[in-house]
Image 1 (cartoon, rainbow, N blue to C red):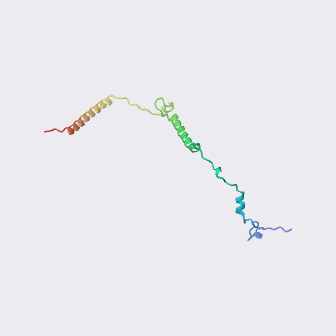
Image 2: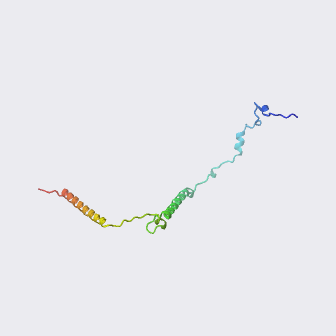
Image 3: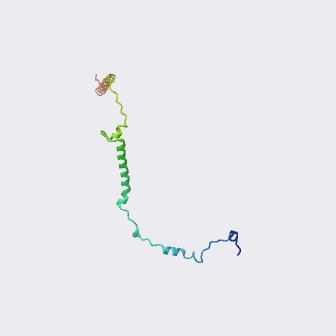
Length: 130
């Protein structure tokens, strides 16, 4: 027996793949006959819970985030979180005598301005008649 060294030379120029005779004829009908028939009753009805469920999940996420930030940051007023008290920096400037004097001067100046504007408005409403 003689052994062939190069099998590719023998197959060059020919198509090694073949289709049986009459395979393509009636192929569509055979495939369609094997498929199950789809009826209108098989369609799934979407319930109200299926429509609302994504919104409930989103609300739960926001509620969870709110509780998380409330626990960490301490949003909530007096007696809030003890964790947040150590994170806040509070500076209180003691009132000095100079601050008190400036506050009194500011009040006097505001009273002066109020009196001036009141007189101006009253003069416009009740002009002097000659």
